[in-house]
Image (cartoon, rainbow, N blue to C red; front, side, top):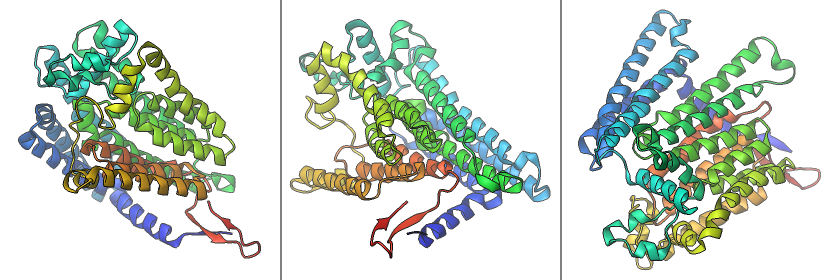
Length: 454
């Protein structure tokens, strides 16, 4: 027997109360106001020059969005049904905020960089563009260990490409033509926008209600709730400062994230084959997508579509790896395995003060302890997947979000910016609800003694 989980109902009610306050405008105001403060502080205090440049522009963009929402709130008090305070207007403000806090500083920095400024891009931008050049010239985006060792000590870190081979595609435009619009960040933004647009379209085509409830006010209310949740998910992947800053200054994580969100949208639309292709494309870019692919395959198995999901989710990353493997196996191993695991010629500078890093750096045998905790978390998630596999896209997104959050917290080497993955995935989950999805808990069936769960 399956029963509703009252705790899940209460937590969902509290979130909806906050999210729906003043028609969603209250939380919009908080998001933009806090983001404006963060951007202003970044502009003044950051030790990274691209971040300071982003903050100076983005603070103005967030301030404009904040003032616009304040105007909407005042208008709503006088005219609650005004179209200028409704959901389409909120979408317009979100688009304006993304343009002014992400796309404008991205274009500005790209133009400055093309004009000769060397402080207008993070190192990953250069790494991806160098990978594109090597792919075009040598058929592989990777340098071998001997070639990296031959570089001056201060340049060896930049010799590594700790991404999957597909990431080099974003560097190909720069390898062909040296101008501002071939900056890899421009193409990261194009890929991100395209994936998010497809995700929104897929979810909007999914019916908000079924059965007799498809008529009248019930349909309108369900559609509005779904679209409001979708807007919140898009905000988390675009105007949230951790995403806006990352795309404007570095950017390689955003197309990976957007493709993962697209895969979950296809899962919610009951398109397992397309979900596998989307997450497979993400996995061909970066390892961070592989856990999401694994959970989606388990979701597919619950719908007798595991093979369809796996064909894209596993097949595309393997297809991307094969050419690099055939051209130079040692270079692939050095960049994709040894360096991320801390066994390269140089170590990664990613050292954010999360528990895993603090344990690894402060305790005797700390790296082993942190690795053990990370493995234990992985085993716990595997047991959860085996005992209660996710049967909905919502459950899949939540497992991916919380799982990546645990992994980021426990990894000995990590970055604060990686939090964009779990934050966006968890915020995306409410938009994935399908008709009939209800929070449930597993309880024993009185007649058979079996346990059933949603």
